[in-house]
Length: 299
Image (tube, rainbow, N blue to C red):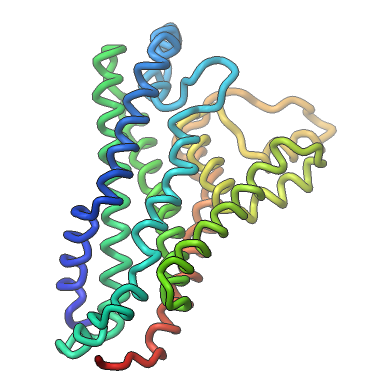
């Protein structure tokens, strides 16, 4: 893949200097810091529990509210992925830079692979930076460093977050290849985001049966990431599938609330991670095939 590293370096430099990404980056930091200080009272109360205190920096948002940190990235990572990919191909095609790039002895697969890889690295840097900043500020609040297991859970959370963000990046690149107008590809990506939000939110607010809610949530990458992140950062959390199995079981009608080990948590969310990887691979494969077969006229 001659030229992939050149494309990767160029796209990575562009991603970190674009105003839209810098603004989103600043919003992510601001919300994360605001959440830490806003919920400081709940975090300090959580110190009374000697296990997984550091993780509660990312999951404590009051007794009756959903974890703000997790919920923020459930809805924010798609915006990052879409902003990096909705004009990845069609903007260069419309401006004529893509045909000039093809004339520089750079293969087509190097172009799309370099753009996708640069987007993944950008998402990883952004997510890891916010996690580290929250951990640093939280460490000053509670004065307790993370244990080895808590550190590993945060690392796996970042990995899952990158996979989740990469799905939206791949989806945006897909629309960027199939649709010639930049505004149209952006609207199509946002429309898919809203559609998956409804698939995630309807079971939470509608009076649906357990099986129906489970099916609707499992076809939404938003729901897959939500359950994965929750199980990784909240060791005592369980997935909807586990809750359904317990509710249908006559042997034990109660769901265990004991904390899972990191290995058990990974086994629990492994199907979710595989599903998100498969969805990302499908989007990228369709984009790759279409881009490789597309005619690019010189200007």
